[in-house]
Image (cartoon, rainbow, N blue to C red; front, side, top):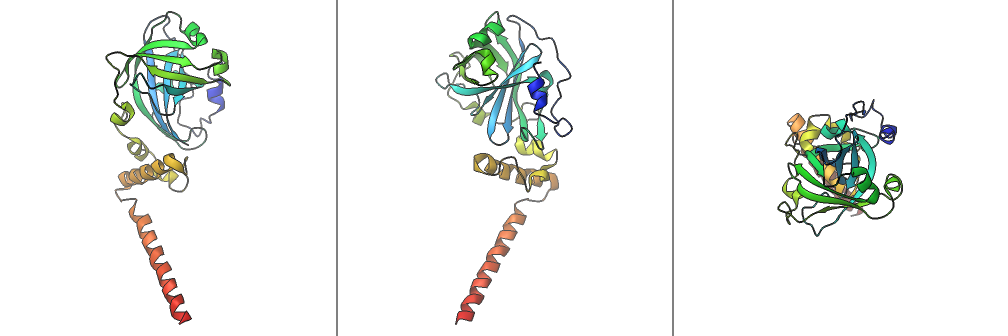
Length: 257
């Protein structure tokens, strides 16, 4: 079944993600259907690009996010199909697979520019038009190698490319429009609505760029939640530690004399 892999990876007693009980009937041919892009800060920051097809959301992880520049080819890694209800999901995954913060970065409709979507996927060349809040116009997903069946397993590499039209441009849309289309907030806003202190001692990403982002986001979310600047306590601890170290050095120098 299409959602078997999705369900196998998750414990729905722990995860707030939808279980996939609702499977709608998706339109066929060139009819418009739902699409979304979710900005996901987990072990690393990436964008999940999802197209509704046959009652589920076909999904690709785009590490650097979509680009409006036709000369830029974004890597898009095919991942497991997600339930249709996932298209409205925004929140915190506290532990387990995908632990992190999920933001609904864009949503709208997509319209195939081909009559047979399945044939285009098998061929590895799916052209379509997006009508979202941030992403619009003509695009293409091109598989780099292998077949559609193998792309769900081993060879999962695709490229997401913007076609030249009135919606193309050099603006970095991820940087220009970083916030949620659902809540209009950022990661810290989303985290502060839940339980931000769950990641004070353990975060999905401990190091690197994602880890640094988590440090800042958790601190700001705690400040928003409690009304107390979260950076004060660590700063005071550091100051106390420095004073204690200096005092020990001073005492050791006196003893030597």
